[in-house]
Length: 443
Image (cartoon, rainbow, N blue to C red; front, side):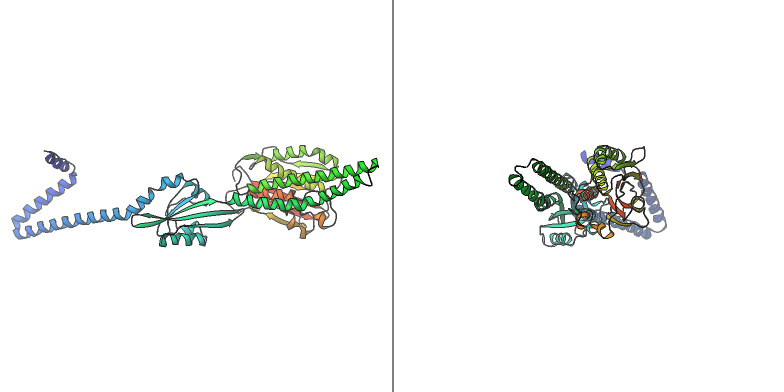
């Protein structure tokens, strides 16, 4: 009974077009029998042969496709496993195509489409060789490599073979080593720089203490004078340590761009208000030129305040009493337009782009430009302005104090923000330093 009902069910599922075709075939066979019996028999046999051939061909095609897609379907089933990994991960087939990837990999390597060749997104020869070794010999490797676009990054790539049926694939997992290596370098650089730069004020303090304990012991005037000198050296050491720690913290996170939003014009106003007392002591005026509307940028507010503060403090230091420092905040277009508006104004000036972002479409920038009315800087000194502990006055034998880290801090903050840092200077007219970062508005 079950077989009968099953047969009836299959007959009911046959399309109406198939029934019509079968009816027409039966009528054609009856008509052929009335004309020529042998021809009718041959026609029926030919029709049966064609039906059998078509059925076998269809079965062969279905089975072949099933076998060829078995590996791809199986590898595709690993996609949830890849998505669960916190690090970027890729699955590569025997033809070096990307079979599957997780969101972290697509975000880090900036690709979307599947079935791309691995070489279209990664060209490091050691990694490609490790993939071939995994495919060919089933070998597992760990490859460390550096990539430097605007920010240097260190990555360790684990390459391991994977077998799925008769096919072989390779799994690539990328682990970012930048923070660890940056921390190690920061520790070494901090010790080297601190020991070198602290030696001078410590030597001065030691000499002053010996003088107070000896010849100046009984002189109140000398004691007060030497104590004031000791206070100056102690303040210098404190500023130096603060700047070194600040620079170290910035370098530690330099490979991670900020995602916050900040009003650059409001930041500049707050910094100028905070520096009003310092400017009054130096008899320097600070004038702000900024739009009334917010100038919203992609950036960390505290670090942007450090940029403006260091630029203004540097300008005030080189401006003569009675002079003026001009702080300008504005918005521009792409990288070239921003560089022209922020750092190419004086026709006879020498200029250097200390830092420039990677060219990208549909990105606009906002800038802060700080002009002083000082003596200007010789052209051959401009490329070195953002070097650690470099001071022009030291090169000229006219030490003015300072740690020599202010512009280095500016450079590293702007680099973390994937922005640019420009300098132009004209002896006798002054200098202008400009930093620009990505605008949060539409390009």
